Amino acid sequence: MTAATAATAKVAAAAASAVAAERASMVATLIRLTGDWELAEDCVQDAVEKALRHWPEAGLPRSPAAWLTTTARNRALDVLRRRRTEQAKLAERALLDETAQTAADYDDRLSLIFTCCHPALPLDGRVALTLKTVAGLSTAQVADAFLVSESTMSQRLLRTKRKISHAAIPYRVPPAELLAERTDGVLAVLYLVFNAGYGQLERLLADEALRLVRLLVDLMPSADEARGLLALILFQQARRATRFDAAGDLVSMEEQDRARWDPVLTAEAHRELRRATRSGRPPGPYWLQARIAACHASAPSAQATPWHAIVPLYDALLAAQPSPVAALNRAVAVGFRDGFAAGLDALDALDADVLAGYHLLPAARADFLRRVGRTDAARAAYEDALQLVGEDTPEARFLRRRLASLPVSSGAVRLS
Image (cartoon, rainbow, N blue to C red; front, side, top):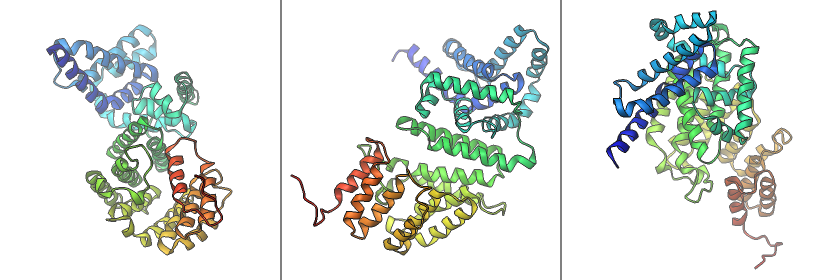
C-alpha cells in the first residue's frame, strides 16, 4: 500500500466514523434551521464529499465531526443566501447562532425521530424515512429492505416528506400529554427496523436499530419502555451468530450453541432490564418480552429453561398488549411447561382464523405432534406449514429437515 493510498484509507475511515456518530444530529439541526429535508441531507453529503477531497492534502482536523458539521452548515447558508427570501434570511441568522444550535441539539435529534415516526404518516413511510434520514441508509439500501426498486422507494420517500409538509406535521418533540403515546409509536417503528430486511441487510438493519434505540435511551433516559426495547434487542443480538449454521440454515433456539451467545451483549441487556424498572411504573410490553428473553438467556441449557416463569410473563404480556402471536408463543410455553399434549390443547384453543397464513401455528403443532409420536398428523402439519413459506427460504429448509426426520409410519411406503 502506497503512502497516498494509506492516507486516503485513513481519511475514509475517519469520515465514516464521524458520520456514524454525528450524522443524525447534523441532519436534524439543518432540518430545524432550514425547514428543508432534502437540503439538509444534501448539505451533509456535500460536507462528506468535501472532506474526502480536502483531508488527504490538509490532514485530518482535530475534530472530524465538528469539521463536517461546520461545513454542512456553511453549505446550507450558501444555498439559503442564493434563495434571497425572507425565510432564508431568518434561517441564515439562526444558522449563525452557534449557542442556540448547541442548546437545541438534544431537541433536534429527538424531533427528527418523532417527526419521522409521526402517526399521521403511513407505517411503511415511517420506517423508510427513519432508515433514510435518521439511520443514514442510502435510498437503494432502503429499497432493498422493502424489496422494491430504488425509483419506487424514491417516490415513497418523496410522498412521505410531502405529507409532512402538506399536513403541517410539526418538527418537534411532542407535548407532555402526548409523549408517552407517541414514544410507543417510535419504539414500534424501531422494532420493525430491527426485524426488517434479509440476507446481508438483516445484520445492517439490526445494527442500525440497536444504534437508534441506544440514541433514544440516551435522549430519554427515564423512558422505561425504551430501555425495555433496548434490552430485548440486545438479548436477540447476543444470539444472532447462532441462529443459522454454516450452510445458512435456520437453527432452533433449542439446538443453538449457547456457549457462542455473546456474553457482553447479554450482560448489557440484563443491566438495561434492571434500569427499566427503577421508575416504579408498571412494566410495558417490551420490558415483558425482554424479561422472557432473559429467562432463555439465563438458562444454561434448553432443558433448564424456566418455563414455569415464562408462562406467567406471557400472561402479563397478553394483558398489556393482546396479540395472536404472543398467544401462540404462550401456547408453546405451556407445552414445554405442562407437557406436549397440554401444548396441543393450548394450540387448539387459539383462534385459527386470526393466525391463518402464519406458518408458525402449523409448525408448532407439527413439533408437538412429533414429540408425542403422532407421526402421520405431524407430517400433515409440516406440509401445511410448508405451504405458507417461500420455496427456498431458511424456514422452508428447516421444515423440510424436520419432515424428513420423521419415521416412516406403518401405512407409508418408502420409495428408493
